[in-house]
Every structure is written in C-alpha cells, then in structure tokens.
Amino acid sequence: MEVAERTRVDLPSYVPADFEVFVNGVRQVRGADYEVVGRSLVFPRSLAQEGRLGFWRWASMWLGIAGTYRRHETVDVVYQSGGKPDVVGLTPVSVGDADASPTG
Image (cartoon, rainbow, N blue to C red):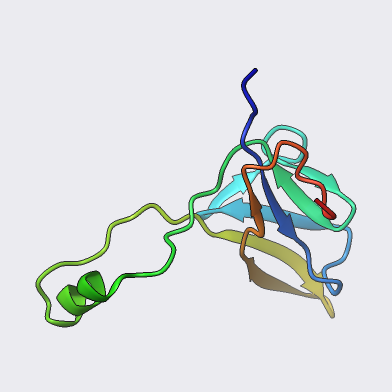
C-alpha cells in the first residue's frame, strides 16, 4: 500500500479566514492545490525544503567555488490587515505524514 506524501503548514492566529496562498509565487487554489484543516493548510504533496548546509558546502559557497541549487519551496499567505494587503511567509512543519493532522 502506497502512502501519499502530504505537507502541513500552520497558519498564524492573526491571519483571517479570507486569504490567498502562493507557493514559489504561484497562486494555489483551495480544494485543488490545498485544503484548510483547522488553522493549517494541508498540501497533497511534499513541499521541498533545502535543509541545513554542511561545512564543506558552506565553505565552498563562502569561497565562491560553488553555490547551492537545491529545491526549496516557499509558502506565502496574502491577507488584509487594517484595510491593507499583508504577506506572511510560512514554513512547512510536517512532511510525509499521510494523516497530516495538526496534532499528528
């Protein structure tokens, strides 16, 4: 049995119920690209995060020998605050959990 990878991103308490979601600058559609479960966004796929750089990769970047080109997806939520648009960048907190519930 294959378990689908999912990603959960928790919304801050100050984000109202009416908002837009973007992954790497591309607008996401609720119901097709993500679901809202409580105060979390649940994506039906894994969102890639670069992770920590090791010493040698960091040193080679510092010396200008090499760069880092790993896949890294960002989640931005756009909402209205005081009548003006505001944006918050969010980080996935759960990857690979088939349930992807906020408590699990």
